Length: 564
Image 1 (spheres, one colour):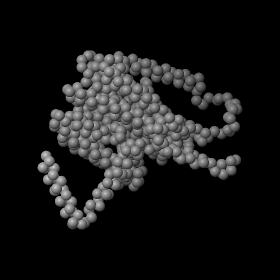
Image 2 (spheres, rainbow, N blue to C red):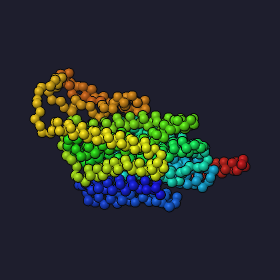
Image 3 (cartoon, rainbow, N blue to C red):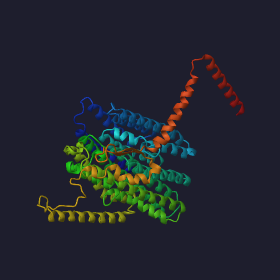
Image 4 (tube, rainbow, N blue to C red):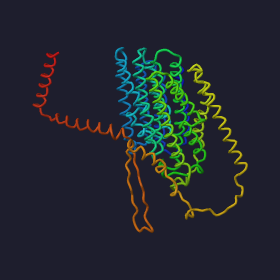
């Protein structure tokens, strides 16, 4: 029941905030469009709650399918655009493929000897919703296409329900030790691939919502690593240390579900506010919005820093539990657990650094500096309802600081509570010290005071412009070049033209496609499409050919029957 509550709270919190945000976000839409949005929005929330409280496998599967269909209606809201229709089609394929895998998992669950087969089918079915690589391809397509309130609900509250399904039907995995080990190592491998791959592909993204979508893949990877480490610890025999690793990593994963829901929901609402006020999510065309949209900019910055796992915000406390479990695993002396703990620690540290870089890019390119387009220069603050919705989710994440300690007290029987209290106390002291220094600066240099003016060395530039500052693409270009072997970006150079004294504009445009889509799914679907086109030749309309095929089939079946 406590697990149900932890998955219900994100649905209620993010759903309420998104509904408040949508009342202003959809202002100006045609009146005949609004009932369609609210019908799909409420149906999505209702089906998500039905997933959590479904009493059996059949009702769970029906609610799961209803959740996919109703949320597809939200993705297709702006269905006049070709990209939106394409994103909806990919999302529907992912939803129905996942449902088929879950049906197969339900069949295997009825056989005790086919438990691992059921688990791997569930990994495919729930992984298509969670966004495990390579099943994540719908996320960077659907989130930019859907309205921002829908993206907030889908990313913050819907995709973690895949973990609820795994916990509901496959936890504890089994009393058989090899099953726990196999399942745990599978989750760790998928988590590492999702965390590292998600944040790597988030780095070069120019579209803000696509960056947040890839970041969701990363955060789902963090949760998977926590659950996987818990299972590996649960498969070891004896010792209070193994139990401590289990409860810390399991609790850390559950806490991160809450943190991701509140923080990522607020970030998607912030991206929607930017889109509504500027008409674009291209970070290379934004900039300078902190002065024009101070509430939105401040809240987006705080939520981004929290989701990057930086102290003292609660995103750090949630990951601290998994870090602690990883360090204990390295100390355990069990070779398998040492390897698992070291892998989790290395992946968490690596993704944490890249996440900080990705969100620094999003904050700096979007809100700081000078505006790089007229739309950004003309932007104004959103209606109060929009930034109040973001503020409510941020305050919820702040409330999760004592909430995390309470969850640890309940789920982990107080194990790790002292570590969290120490971290929260130090973090609170840092916040108070920072606030005191800011107050001192304001006292010594009050706003509006007359400041002395003197000429400065400007390196020959009389009036600096936004063209002299880093764009979002340029900020992360060194990291994108460093990991070009994985990202494989495409670069297009538009060279200078005209006289050297008065050249035309030049530009370097980079595009980074999702490697899973371009390198795996597209070739796979192309292969099957060509195979089916060739098989279609058999439908020639010739009766003689049909009779021949029937005779060949009968002969093959007779030979197989005699051989058996």
